[in-house]
Amino acid sequence: MTDEYETATFGGGCFWCVEAAFKELDGVVEATSGYAGGDTENPSYKAVCRGRTGHAEVVQVTYDPDSVAFEDLLEVFFTIHDPTTKNRQGPDVGSQYRSAVYYHDDDQRRAVERFVGELDAGDFRSYENDTVVTEIAPLERFWEAEQRHQDYYEKNPGDRYCQYHAEPKVKTVREQFVDAVQ
Image (cartoon, rainbow, N blue to C red; front, side, top):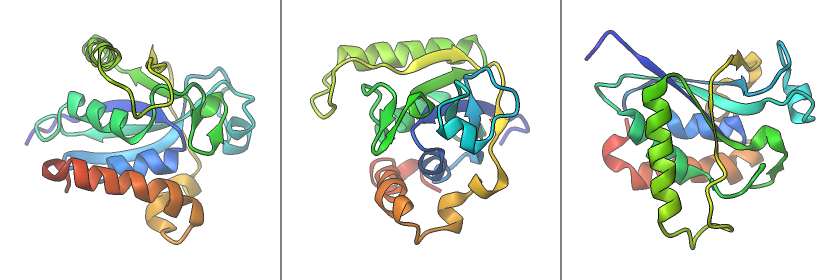
């Protein structure tokens, strides 16, 4: 195991759900809910949810590259959300719920561009549309969400929203990525 961890940042709808799914993976050291991609300093959950900041709800994943590769994280990410629906995931509508990968370096940029190219060339019959609309942009700044949003699924397993939207993502990871689950 290396002493060097890497970081990746993903937006795929509600951050509670994305965070819960990534926390299932072996090699994920930390998954932190937050905001990125906007132009407002110190955004709040309330302002982001109202669509007034330009930010997306995102999850910043700290991972051990000796245990899980960035490409594996991409595969999970593109499995747990619909990358062909613009500004919507499930019941959550607005640019704050957009599909996005905010890359940290040129290697990540190239990997996500290659991955999306392969997805676009494939079969998307299970999706509403057939073209990936995921935003691919450099991470300018990550703003950590308020403490009450961190580990939300873990802390609130009985929450109805989590039961309907986070649990299916966690179940998908456990079933489709058996060898990668902690």
